[in-house]
Image (cartoon, rainbow, N blue to C red; front, side, top):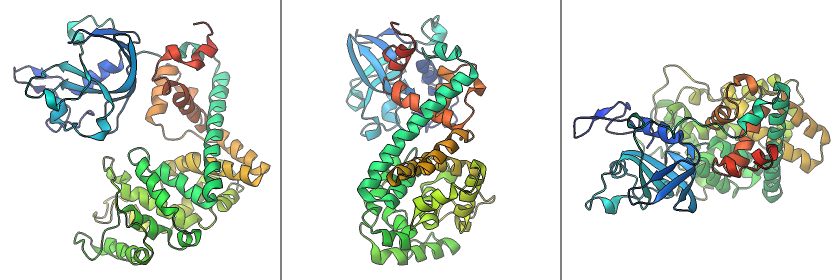
Length: 455
């Protein structure tokens, strides 16, 4: 359960338990688990020995508190998710039973085990660890650990580190371009571009839903997509209300919905069935606003998105290119600059659908990989060179959890070490390729052993 989401204690403040003692916030137990050092051993209540190889990645989004932990139970290695609670019965209180997001929980970490004959049938089939209270122990097993490679990076000069990370970021861009090239060969450049945009806009909660939506949209012809993309995207998503039945629609929202509905209805193929969007993000990041972004991207750059964007890349500096894309996307978005959904009241303070950070992320995560694939397909060496030049001079993107975690673990004390988008992407590449692949187990990391052979 995430901090500040307990229905009984939404503010995350300590609360009294049945014995009068103040109940510890789950966030404190999460912090303690995150700080468990590699190799720490615990004795479980059933007598088995648990050795922590990696506590996993702290998950701030819906789902288990830690993903992809690497553990050893009586000599048997296994991987999976870890859920943190004050007591074991909180699993039932928080409604995790039957939730598929919690289907890979292999360890239930609690401060108190209140398993009983009456509730055991409703608890997960996972090992239970009663984590010692650090205020009652010396805490010799706890302390925020650094990655093994931190010592190697600490010896690099700023220029050496920047080049290393930028090279890693370039490798990531090449790999993503290869993925987009395979999509282009399969379904064409236009649909490959739209699929890449949809997937990126679904991050983090709704990536799979947006990916499936892109698959459904690929069933339409390119002519249909060019002429009706916004209406098709809204209709197939299931997020388009029925204007004849929805009484909550008012004013401009009803007019917009009616126009989209009338355009989509004669062309519909699936009708938006089978989608379930998570609405766990801030209203300004609602699925409706994300879908409005996708609609605007299609409206702006179809029928030849790769050709149009390749032309924009010739217009000057990275800053001018980003400004040009932002201006073009912002045209015609008055409704979504003022609303979070079709039914919402007008925002007191309008918020641009395409702010500069959003455009920068789209450029780095969608435009550059897709155009790199397009350049390879068209054998356009000049475009390819331009793409990688721009990538290396792009300013830093809005930070995300992976980047912050990698900076804390691998580059402690070097806040200014990651100066551009390429270096940020390099950190993400290292995380995906090594840290995530090995579940944070530095002892099994090929990168670290290439730096320090024999260790």
